[in-house]
Image (cartoon, rainbow, N blue to C red):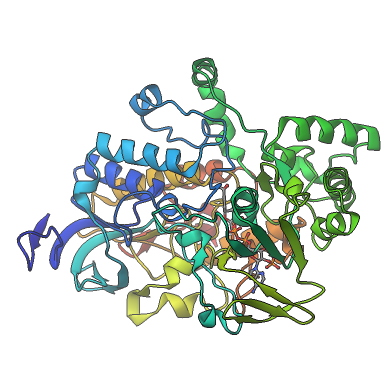
Length: 550
Ligand code: N01
């Protein structure tokens, strides 16, 4: 890397020229830096955090864990890492996941190519030079041929638009931006707003510590038990032995299978037996109980009723049980929470559920909040209201592509992309696990690996050209966007007001963003086998046979 720095003690390049900039030091960003380097390219990673970790750097709230089993939520690209690392639990805690990421960063010396405490603010494409100019909050101006946005799908915290938030006199913690030092809730009255995955994980732990806990719930979520437990060496060995099978299964991680549309509705007995079994085993495998769980309202109703029945058996107060039971959207079309003791927590004498459907928040006050019918006092406030998901981190940067076109304008009505990986008119810019790819459906870590590998192959494919530019055609993009929407429309997903649709952010276009169709990797491989049909190399589009003959 050629660099000139303003301060010899700082490794901050004020100006630098590299082959590739990678934005983000989470799982996908680190892997991208590793791969690009191995390919012999100069690379600069940039992250707003002070160290590696991505979402796991920020999400330090009590109870934070992964809801994907640890053995699956691990890199597959390094045999060495797999051999040397041992997970202690079926669902790893945030500190353990962060240690894993740090272990990988140390092992491959990945930090040395990163600028930390630095936010990318803008990126402009210079058509003549075939170069991106990447600007940062620290005043850097980096020239790069390629830009990989590994900015995470859930990395821009969403704060509730509630009057008075700034007036609260006590500490306010967002789950997605938790302090590094332990927050001690002992002897405190705590309010929590939000009951998605973050709230559902944090609430039972805070309840054990706080003197009093008020949970402000707008919409109840479906949650299934984790049944977490220790992992043994045998578990690791068994997983290693099954690795080829696991790798094969990645193809269809999280997708709605095509068999969903012809599958019969299982009998009540069959459903009951299956749901009981899955409830006892725990985890999000509940989502694949039946192939048509996310396409048939009738089958879905059975799963929803089963979970509601479980809540009634766990929660002693019938009114609280009713309030905790999700009824406004089908099961699984908002991300299902995976919990430990969530519903049972509401049996504790120090925990009270406030149903915001019945009494909406009117204002936060200096010592609590007021709803339409009540006044609640607490000393500390936890905000678990999620993220501006999938597009938030990308659109936080001012990205300008060919002919001065702005990504914010191109995506004003919802994200447009080909394969969730590239946007027409933004050459050599890659959205790793971007909207339009399976990304958050299934296992985002492994989807990220797949995207990075694909980008490296695209770059290799273009490498023969002088000043290579890779773009996608408007036609391929339009077709892909329509396909992503069509696949989602055949499922129950669009019914719910989920962050998959941007519905959690006031004013955000309502567009279903992840790809839930079958065979995403196969499609990507087929496109590659046809010479990367739909992509453009140095402005020459690769056309499909049908388009050629048209
Ligand atoms: O956020 P969410 P999250 N007033 O958007 C409520 C991943 N994750 O951080 O539904 C009152 O799901 C909102 O209510 P409503 C996982 O993919 C993974 O919990 O909009 N309430 C909802 O209850 C997850 O899906 C893990 O009516 C307001 C909550 O806040 C994703 O991150 C752990 C409100 C937000 O739920 C996001 O989860 C944690 C308002 N103004 C997270 N605004 C793992 O285990 C919002 N809410 C890997």
